[in-house]
Image (cartoon, rainbow, N blue to C red):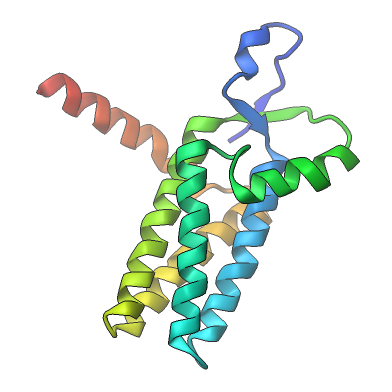
Amino acid sequence: MSTPDTRTTTPTATIDQVDVRGPRFAAWITTAVLVVVLLLTTFSVPAAAILLGLQAIVFGIGAVRGPKRSPYGTIYATFVAPRLSPTSEREPVAPLKFAQLVGFVFAAVGVLGFAIGAPVVGTVAAGFALFAAFLNAAFAVCLGCMIYPLASRLRTTSHTAS
């Protein structure tokens, strides 16, 4: 889901694009957090719910503010990116924001499941979020980004039908 860096040809093309390594870095952190959530479910469901709630907040911030201004994006920009060579690949922000929204929904469902005494719901929702985060981190496959074009078309279709 990446596109070539077009800074030299069209300066405005990069306004809504980010270095592909940033979201993958965030996906690795998310993967680690969600693994801990699933491990915690065997010892303390309330602790798992709290940690998943914190991850939901991170997802929510990423969905609203974008990958650069999300907590993990800020860590990447501050501590990791300055140590790397300039990127040759960039990707659009909108699909990444949508992917964060999808992550937020799964995390929120998980927290709700834990809160109402349905730990299986919480665990399954956290597991789905973990699966998506790991695919992005390890294989650069962003499921939310892949669904984004369909969701965009559905949203556009519903707006024109009204």
